[in-house]
Image (tube, rainbow, N blue to C red; front, side, top):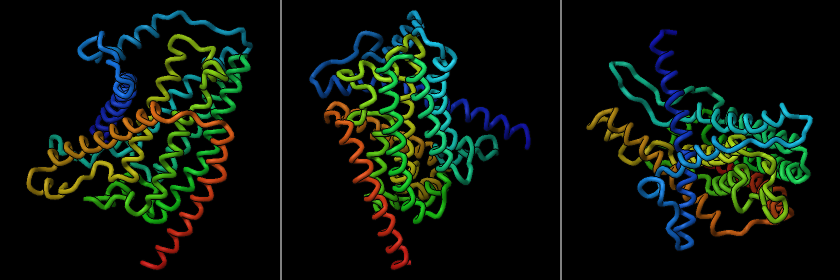
Length: 343
């Protein structure tokens, strides 16, 4: 392993980390702007042009706020909860292919921090660990509302992980790989998986809402029942970590949706661009195309939040266990039959 490879991967990891942080930060600004648009308001417009400095102002406010700690014997776990939620949200971006490759100083740089054969399984594993951050934070807060919110969030996330995993099996039967890079390469042009797996995409999309605790599945934070949910007792940057992790998860889930079902960085005519314009130009455009797809899904998350009311808890569980899981199994069976029939 030469030093150039180590430097290349180190720079790529820093860039991916920074992009994830910036996208999560400005998703808070976009959330307010989308809400204002849908409610016929202006939205943030004081800090910078069009309110673009509002996320920085919010961050400074959270840093400056006094930290209150509840009277709990589990102070260490009270600190660990937000750290787990934040770190798991950032770790998933390591295996995502942000583009194909660039030629820099005669060296081929692949735009993926690490390409492992089981990258999709890695994402599911890391996301599952995020449940512990929520559960630990709610339990260590020594508050019944926090604990109830954490139990709701954990049961919701675990339940919908089952349906999400089953929805992925049909896609994996078609692609024959767990590598996100290979899945992206198979969708060159307009050969997108959403055309072959529309039901799987719909199930995955619904489960992504539940996994990120977004409306209409934000039962862990409903103010009328649980005050602030599992982060009721948190303040300052510890609360900021939980809020930031939600937007980071929204960004990552939007990226995974774009990569798995909408071709990732691929676009029609990409191969022609590589042959006639150049590898770097074509692949930089591919990065831009990927981020356009990501921003569309982020907007969709926000649109749904300000449009659809919250489900009841029993409705949430019935949807997951009685509808999505059986539908996922039926989708697997139909996919298997189609593969055998048209192979």
